Picture 1 (tube, helix red, strand yellow):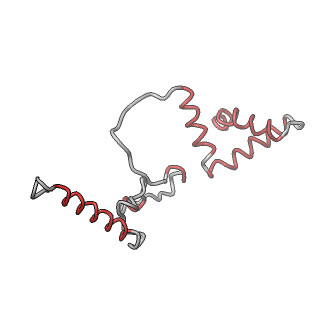
Picture 2 (spheres, helix red, strand yellow):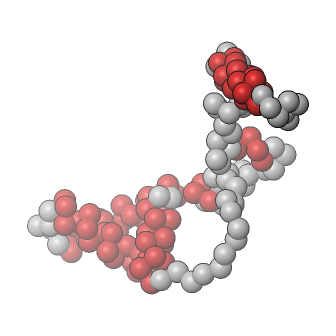
Picture 3 (tube, helix red, strand yellow):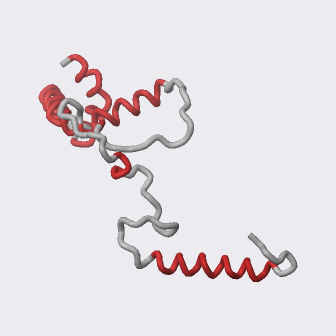
Length: 134
C-alpha cells in the first residue's frame, strides 16, 4: 500500500528491505520451519498426519505417501505406457524379487550358455507373462 503516490520509491525500497531481511533471517530458523527459501517438499509425508499409510496387506511400492498435483484428468494409457507402468511396478516391488530370481533360474536352465546381459534382457521381456502363469 502506497500512502504517498508521488513518492512510491520509499515504499518499494521498504518492501525490498523487509523481504531481504526476512530471507536472511530464514536461514537461522530450525529445519521444520518452512519459509520462502525452504518450501514444504512436494510429496511431504508429514502433510498426511493422522492418516495411516502402513497396511500389511498392501505392497510397499503402494504405501509411499504423496499428494495429487493439479487438476485431475482422465485418460487412457497407450499400450506402451501401460507396459512400462506394469514393468515398473513388477521390477520395483521387493515382494516380487524371489519370483524374478525364479524366472531367471528357469531361463538359465533352458539356455545354459546365455550371457548375463542376454539373461537380464530376456527376464525383462518375458517376466510379466511368466509371472501371470505362475
